[in-house]
Length: 106
Length: 120
Image 1 (cartoon, rainbow over the protein chains, first blue to last red):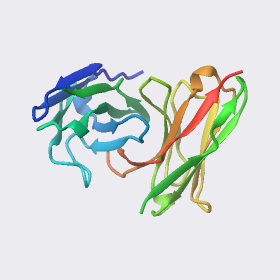
Image 2: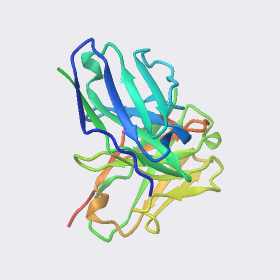
Image 3: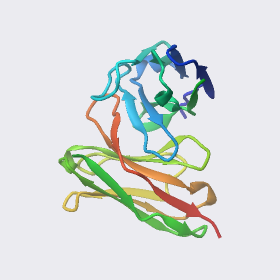
Image 4: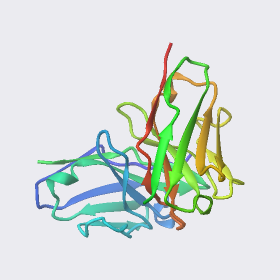
């Protein structure tokens, strides 16, 4: 089965840039979505089609996808961005999530 | 306003059954594919199942295939997940989500989740 691999944690200082990677075989051939998940809340879509932002998502969230790696970048990270982030793709009509990355804003 | 409201969660014994519902409003239900996603305590998100807008196509994660059945009733604007032969590892918060019509099938709206606990 297809697997997506994320680093368990990323730390970033307020105002700095956080980069979260998601790796999978030939991942660049698929489209990737990214979700933000805070404890006790429902997931929020922050990036889809590799780099598109839904309405209402701040411009500081951006995405890219090439080769075997997709990346979610948070520029000018704010305290409110502290959360778990999950990449997600589809493999033969089966959904696959990465293991999630905890972003800590120090 | 798009709203998804799950119900039907609760405590069930191993081997038991449960049916989750997801009541949808604020959009034309039968135009959108829908998914169920779960999160076990302390674990990450896991995709469970999806169904096309018309209900003719369904897909399942290997972990639930043969035990869970996804369905939808357009007359009631409701998505269902019938869960049979439940195991302890099915304990999780179950979310329903709407899929946008893009190649990446992003899930743009999510319910608040319903907790399923499988324990004796």
